[in-house]
Length: 56
Image 1 (cartoon, rainbow, N blue to C red):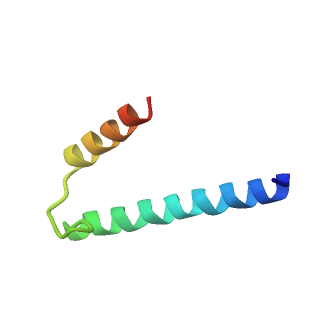
Image 2: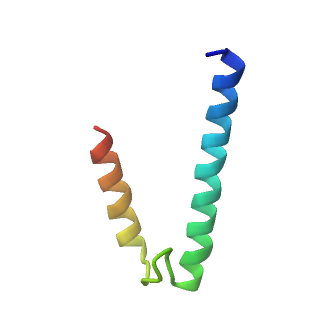
C-alpha cells in the first residue's frame, strides 16, 4: 500500500467519525438517537466506555 493511500484512507475514516459524532451531538439536542430512543450523557459515556473496553 502506498503511503499516500494510507494517509487518505485514515483522513476519510477520521472525517467520517467526526461527522458521525456531530450528528450524534445534533440528535442529542433533539433528544433522539439513531434508533429514536431518548439519549442522555450518562448513556453516551457508558457507551464510549464499553467501546474502549472492547478495544483493549
